[in-house]
Length: 292
Image (tube, rainbow, N blue to C red; front, side):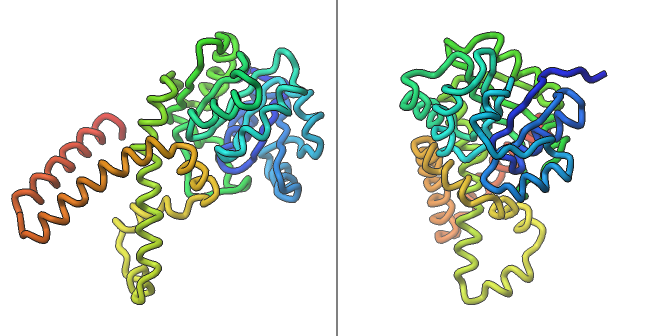
């Protein structure tokens, strides 16, 4: 049976990720009041009407002062712009977390603003999403059976970590902890690079003279691989800049493999092509057995 974990939740950034966090907790009756804040008041009102949030805030200072938990769901490079305001106005007991896909950039930004990362900030990242965006795309079950990675620092309080973990677990997510640098390295390989490749492929093909026929006759494999190219460009622009070092490392490794295959195809080297494809096929099957 659900019980209230938070009296007043403030969600800053009520797109798919923030909206789904809000709606999931509201649906499960684990928060008393959900306040949403964003750049577009009209969209916030739509969120109220759709039952995603209870209140559309137009005074951020006041909303911060009243919040028990603050969830920052804004583009990676925008987190820093909110953190000083939060530090100035939050309750002493309030806990703050984020959902950014890059943790190193977030921590550096907070240190630049405040001199150190406060003990009440719990860096987090839900491994879930969709190419859809906006508050009306919110899905209260988005995080069910998905992992959420927390990257607490040495000074992050146990109480703050538990409070955030409890909220994610109430949404049906599996919470795991990971060192910050490892998080950014892993996500560069499993999320950031695939998005980069999908964006690049679609951009390449749309520039061809025959792009209408290419897209018209695209089969399921093309649709599956390129679905994520419909994701929010601003968010992914920020991720590419924020996790530049790790992404470049993964991109270089991928280019080496792609170059190897290019040379093998050019030389009609069937053995090399088959060995590469077989390694990939077996690896994907092992991954599927563990994760799907």
